[in-house]
Each structure stands twice: as C-alpha cells, then as structure tokens.
Image (cartoon, rainbow, N blue to C red; front, top):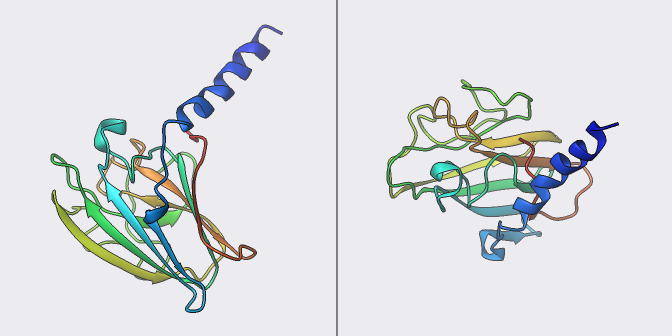
Length: 171
C-alpha cells in the first residue's frame, strides 16, 4: 500500500517536465497534395540533456507522427558546439540500444551516422515512411541514443496529416 502514492508521484513527474518543451510550429511543413512533410530537426538546440537532444527534446519527450507512405524530409542540423550528432530512424525498443548499424527504412539516416556531423553542419535526409509502426529518431553516434538522444517517430496507417507534439518522457 505504501508504494501506490510513490508510483503516482513517479508517473506524474514526466508530465511536469513536459510543460518545459516548446514545440515551434515552424518546425513542421506539410504538403498534403504531394504527401510530403518537412521537419526541421536540430541536434543540441538547447542545453537539455547536456545538449544531447533534438529540438530541445530528449528521452522521447517529442513525437513526430506521419501518415504511412508519405515522403519525409528531415532538415537536420547539429547546433551542439562540442559533440558530433546524427539522426537515424530505428525501430522503437526498450531498452534503447547503445548502438545500431542500419536504419529501419532505406535512406533514413545521415551519412556516416556512427560518426555524426560536426558543429554547425547540416544535411537533409529524405525517405519514404513505407511501413506503419513505432520508431525512434535516434542519434546513432555510439552511446548518444542510449543517453536519451531520441524522440518518437510514429508512422501511422490512420493519420490524415503529420503532427509534431510534446509527449511525456518515456525514460
């Protein structure tokens, strides 16, 4: 019986931190006619999680949902002045892997994802979100993803349009 209040407190803790994340509507551009979504994805946008974040989000506190079969363009930029970063689509898994070798979808990663892009560099990543399912946008520099540098990426068979929203942290 003593554990119930503690569990309620722990479950509520991520919701409090969620309110700190501000989602900029300019990060998401949608072309419904072309079935294409463009997303501005900045590594190290803020100091959150020691700079290991995408658009200020870490540990799954941001979710990008896109309809299946849409073209996705990630306008990826490394804003971290210290560490290299990359982005790769991987299958959602708990625990989050320490390293990965291949993206879950063809072309769904920056070049040399295990090395990452250096500070103030950028690369566009374009792919088709073919298969509905739960994925992560994950930094594939070894150890970064496991340290919380990932956000949810849901490919939906029922969504009518892309959406980017703050979500409670998963870890």
